[in-house]
Length: 115
Image (cartoon, rainbow, N blue to C red):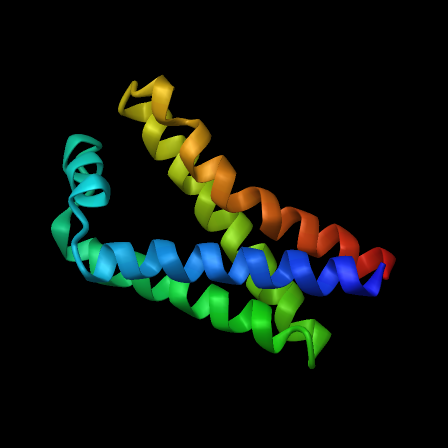
């Protein structure tokens, strides 16, 4: 169970870091939807920073579990907010995207409590 927790946590951290980098480097496939969802451009650096902090926190949580739990909860709340943003923009076909990023974080939290 411990090995599964480590692997899933690393996958979740890599996905969160990739998502953060996509915002920081203004990847077109990320910023176009943000514009369509009407997310203010001034928020983008903060959104990327939140995901980057969550990724670092997940990795730190492998050594200090409380940090990992806090980071995991923060990322779950972040991606829940992303789902709400997508639904409010009525882009229902985009709902699965934040869920893909949230899934390993949720799995990491569950495995962390059972390991």
